[in-house]
Amino acid sequence: MTPRALTKRFYARDTTEVARDLLGKTLIRRLGGESLEGLIVETEAYYGVDDPASRAHRGRKRYNAVMFEEPGRLFIYNVHRYWMLNFVAHEPGKVGAVLIRAMEPTEGVERMRASRLVNEDTDLTSGPGKLTIALNVDRSLNGLPVTDETHPVHVLDNHLNFEVGRSNRIGVTKDLSEKLRFYMKGNKFVSR
DNA sequence: CGCCAGATTGACT
DNA sequence: GTCAATCTGGCGG
Image 1 (cartoon, rainbow, N blue to C red):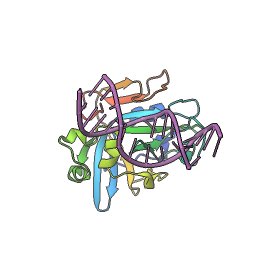
Image 2: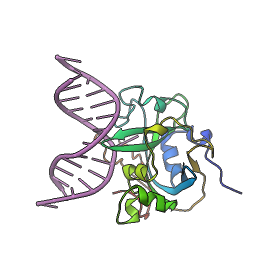
Image 3: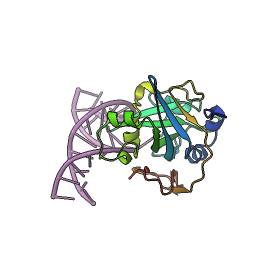
Image 4: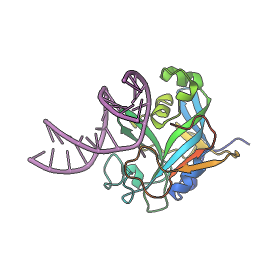
């Protein structure tokens, strides 16, 4: 049977669980007739007002409102000159999103290479800012649902075997004590 | 309006 | 290892 897109049920759980479970799933970006795809190999969980590193820390604003709303949508924001790709994920009534930090390309690599000049393919998607350039993701996609195959960004289920690594979040000035970063051990597309 | 900070990256010592 | 480009939004005046 063909794999199906992860539905709202998948995203409507604790943010940390969703971050861990997104590892090894297939991220799909449809662009015109093309399909850019890759395995998610690195994620981070961000919560609401109690998380000093979260975009939602200072309360609900227009640009972060989607974090407070329905799970299973895109949350995209800017840092320096890059766009960050997040999936809204949290329990009912909570606030949170999962940052996609890196993926291993599996389809549409030529198109990704055309988006940016790099020497190695490992530089294509091995960081949150690189990944959004490769996938042509920007603020225009903010708030879009991802809960079925018709949406321009969605995630397919997979059942792969791999070891999960866990650490503190990267680049954060005020982190929480819990380790909220997850990555696929040994994968060369993991950032840094 | 001005100033500052940031979930980054790439260039350079 | 250091450092700054460059963009968006928060906040003070």
